Image (cartoon, rainbow, N blue to C red; front, top):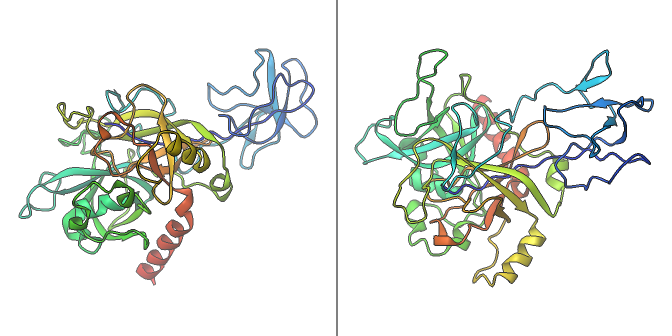
Amino acid sequence: MYIVTTVTWVVISCLSSHVLSQTPLCDSRLRYGGVCVETSTACPSGTFSYVHFSNYIGCFGVNQKCCANNPQGAVKYPDGIVVTPPPTCGVGSMDPSSRILDGTLTGPCDWPFSVSLRSRLVPTNDLTYQGTTHVCAGTLISPTWVLTNSACVLSAGISAADAPGNAIVVAADYNITGIDIDPLTGRQQEQVINIKSAHLHPDYRFTTQFDLVPFEDTQAINSNAVALIKLAEPITGRCSGIACLPTEAEAANNCAAYDECVITGWGFVSESFETGVKDELMLGRVRLISAAACDFLTARLNLNSSRPIGTICQSPRETNTDSCLGDEGGAVLCSNGFNWVVRAILPFNMCLNGRYNLYVTSASNYLNWIQTTMAQVDAATTG
């Protein structure tokens, strides 16, 4: 499984005469502004010693601390330490490591936003877990909404209109070949959820599963390749959660690169397809590259086609890390220091036989459509 995920860390830039070096805008730390001072020195008026996670480093000096403004919602303790409470979205494993293709396993419940989109094995099968097979991945962005690739909706559901009758979504899935048992409750961990409706971006070129064949035109298949799935019921259980969408400020951030991003999925772990799909959820580390840098790479690599509409570039942080068949629709998740944010959607691909899947659909480019569609459908459902 090659997966492409984006993890974005937001930056705390500590600037003063005490600073050893200025933290770049796109570095992997929180951006609240502040100053680096010696640990024995009191923080300037209006700022507090700031810590975040056990591995957070506010300043580069061993004997320095970062003094920053109190972030909204943070708690200041008597000793002056400020800690921000956990968010309501994007809470997952905070140890991005290994890879998907030839990758390392995640643990159950580590990535509660990842869902499996399943389709019938044969047309006569019941629409159940046992009667379906994994086709694509998706990401929970609300208790009743899944973000995925448009081609995934067509591959699993035949068309957007037919998806409710042909596909299901499984939340809290870990091993996609059998039922997982929650060790804390002794009950089934997965939640099998019917699809209420599916929505393709209006500028997506294809409308049915049959339009996707043949698969040679990956530029067209992956242009405007963003889709939403409305669930028939909300997610429940301790192993299900939602990832955060980018804020407007995050969406507008045009960093040249985001170094700390992850991808997860159940796709093939070998580009030769000899080892098959991995049963358990896998994790890989990637970096995202801006649109401008992506265009430069496209020209430099002499790629035959232009960059698909709405995409940016990703590259592996480790050898052989990439998305493969079965990983499509999953997210590139980036951390903003507090939570995991969906920054991109994995492309429809065939592993490319040794060439990395360079292009991923930018979630920021479609943020308005995502939010508007969800609001309109929810209003029509409850109205």
